[in-house]
Image 1: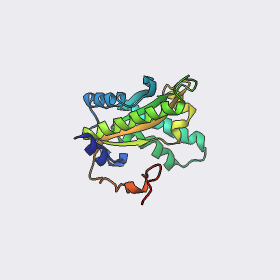
Image 2: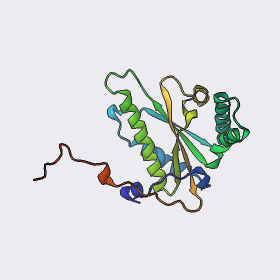
Image 3: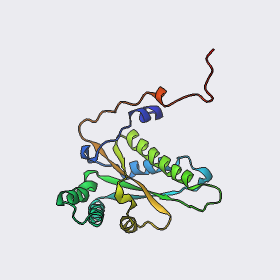
Image 4: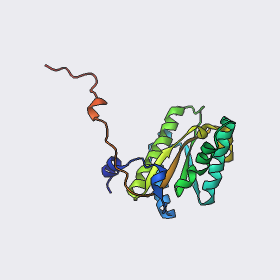
Length: 193
């Protein structure tokens, strides 16, 4: 699959439409190699990644369930179960972590965060190009100090996303894309004579 085809046919697949198999170790390596090719001002490599699979998915689900209990002690049992089982819907989850230096003398934090987002996008494209379904999710639990601590994040690290990866079950068409002309204009505006 060439680069433009991967970009134009990539779509977000809900984990409910994912099943095994997930990416092999070799496929995951290609996904991480794609992340390393992201634009990165200053070559700071302001990212790191956690692979969650197997029993780790259940443990992540317990972290998510604990988060909703702390957020709202009167949360319904249904919502707790939804959070607990969310990570079980995909064979592999990659936690994308931004290692942002807010005091870097040259590279602003926003540029570091943009590099991490570019790495995540490259990962989604690499997964798709290898035939895997993917979804980038965040959710409020990504900002929870307990969740972050349990995942081993330290000061100046943040969760940028959870990438759910698996194989497409059934069909999930590419959504219609917006009209390019609605988002692009010339500057300064061309003068029509």
